[in-house]
View 1 (tube, rainbow, N blue to C red):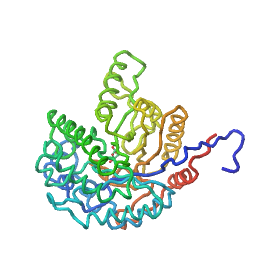
View 2 (spheres, helix red, strand yellow):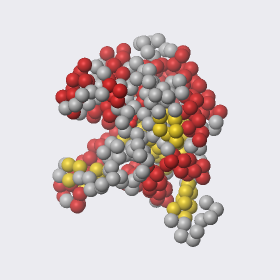
View 3 (cartoon, rainbow, N blue to C red):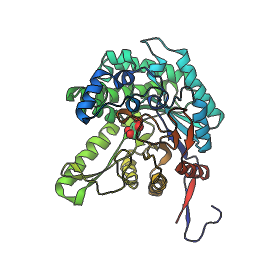
View 4 (cartoon, rainbow, N blue to C red):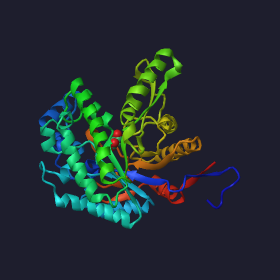
Length: 412
Ligand code: BGC
């Protein structure tokens, strides 16, 4: 910073900007009993996987099991968070840990999160809490999960319990993580539990999630009027390939359906917008045309500037925006640093262009259980040894830590 030369510029972020990383309960905690853990090595899953992929099911990769064992290694996670100079940490509360049986709340489960919140606060790190990140208790899944009309009352009871308990220490609540991704993978693609391809169930789950979000918003505000409540929404930058008319029409439709539909429906029920952003989609007659050679472990192209367009599109809502997820999966850590820096340059540009971005949460703090893709994709700032559970910061993470400490960085 001190030895900046004439061609260099320091990109300073607004004061109070949240620098964070994110995780979710099922992906890191280990030992969960919910609809996902039930499904992971079920006969149905193995049979469908082997049929679809034409290869043997790999138990070690696809069953979450102990995951990163964050349940027993929270103090190590905290060390990573501190080493990275983060001033905020996004994590989720596991409904099935809090209410393993219908109506019976577990004090042990509450204690686990109580400790996390207490330790974060003691270190001046802001807890940014997600109430549901894709997993549902088994008893609720048996009633139909998100396709059941009953879920509203059960979820609100859980929300009331959590928010009442933690309201003095928590200001930020994300009700749901990516309702659209969940509904799509579970009921359109049929690749996530309960693996039911059914358009009716797809719509039902999506509309339930929207309705329950709105009701949860009102409930949280009633319990704590100062709370900041939002949703973490997966938005994509759609680009019309070569500006062909058909591509432009498809882009318009996708911008409405994928990027705006949910935000429009919860417009009056959010204090901030949570943006999860990973993808750029160059639409070519309904197909995705990737012109980029650099791809992540997920097969996603390297295109950090897409976040600029995703953020500009959210300006119309006139609310603060937190980037609740953004990241790059790559075990070799070759492109991650460029990905982070170029992404942040674009975030900075949107701020200069008048978008009220107030925080950035890199996905993810740790290499974790990447849902139906198992443990293979490595999103972590910190690697996790799956036998010893030792955490080790990757080289790119050390530079991210400097960015967080300096609230910005130098560019040429
Ligand atoms: C989800 C995360 C997931 C990440 C990378 C997001 O859609 O919220 O749980 O690990 O993408 O695929």
